Length: 287
Ligand code: SF4
Image (cartoon, rainbow, N blue to C red):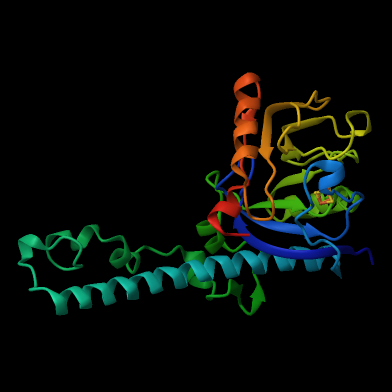
């Protein structure tokens, strides 16, 4: 049976490009056809993509569903923790201060503002029939439910759960079967590729981040094209046709040097068809 070698699957916010800040499941494939280093590319590859496990399509679809279920469940836990924290804060305030009168009830969970307290009111949100049928882990009648509506809570602003195909270089492994299976499971697909391998049709959002010379780029259409630029590197003359053209200042590990940022800012000021894009996940401290 055909398998794909997968490095990791995790849920997080997209930290780069036009889709920055959106929630996604990252499906990271093992392996890359390049070895990016400061000496040759102006930056060192910051991704571990060597390890991995062989998974069938069914196993990938199940693992993605499980990841989203876990994200939805931990979101519910976070709401509970938030509620506990808020109650603890109220207790501290109750202990430290004289209790306010009902007319001073702001933020106390009692009194006239209680109805506006989102933490308190999370308890009373209506649940759909399907949610009521599903247990906390998204299982229905003991079987994994691959269309669990509880995942709506961790969906994108378009109401869809997005998968980001990444690596390493995902184009080494992805194919029509994978794209069809993930679409059939209800997902939209984004990809982050170095552009050196032409992609199959059907991917919903393509990010090409070239790491090879322009003549060696095979994927020449994209939604966004993003070049990492170190201090002193020129604006690219790209062969990739894309609506969004992005310059991403090279980080040194998790550190962005001031002079690199200033250099890239100036590149964009001088070439206004380009846009500055930062690796915000490193600023946010998320994966
Ligand atoms: S193409 Fe991307 S994943 Fe591959 S070595 Fe370069 S930076 Fe790393």
